[in-house]
Length: 92
Image (cartoon, rainbow, N blue to C red; front, side, top):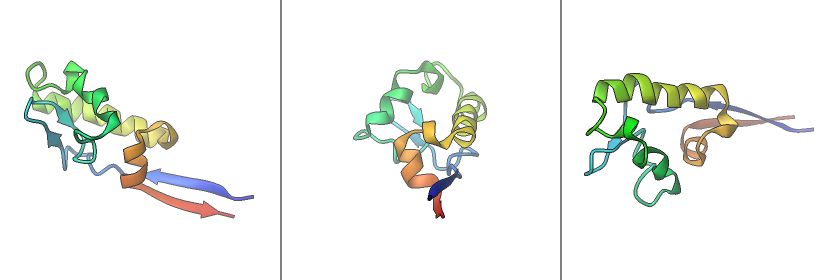
């Protein structure tokens, strides 16, 4: 039987490659753009809004938690993270 082994290495892990919208919403990367269904996770959360939260806190607390959660359980991460940042390998 084949089983998937998945490791996600988020490119946003150290606050690298962040995407900031014109409204001051910080998203982990450009893949979570205006056409992404997953953008609301960030757009509707003041923890990712520069009006309410300092950039250092966004990166060092909220993005870090986002990354830690994905690394802990890749299958519960965002689809875009799975497609763009995962190392997928099928083992027999």
